[in-house]
Length: 153
Image (cartoon, rainbow, N blue to C red; front, side):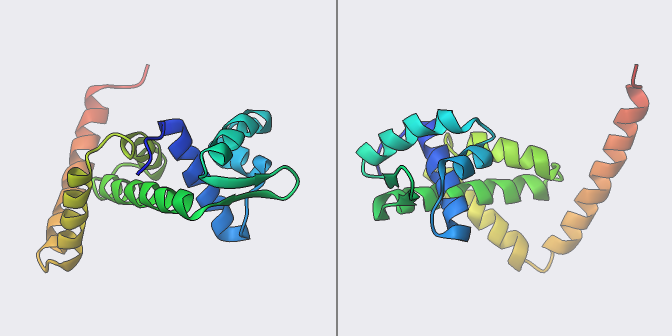
């Protein structure tokens, strides 16, 4: 796999997300997906085009090349795996999304593979349902105790 910056990986993932719906992505769509201004997108899009990750035509939008798609799918899969783990841990969706975005770039592939295995175990194990229910109750009790100890000023 190409050695890409976190920023470049985020762009590829955003392009994949947008183009999955439309078949292509415009710079304004990418900007919206990344919560940045459209002029900021053009420079990175041109760079990714030069690297062969995307095809960029100013008025026709952006499409992923096969290599760019492969990388984007790996990043999106890592993101979804990590987000799923964090949500199982009762992290809010917004925080899980944000944290998964940071973690997806840094964790070793072996770590991601083992997280996938753990998630599969939780889905397939007959005992997992009751364990997760007990964990949910445990989290609620701990959060309630913590909110009593630290009142809002």
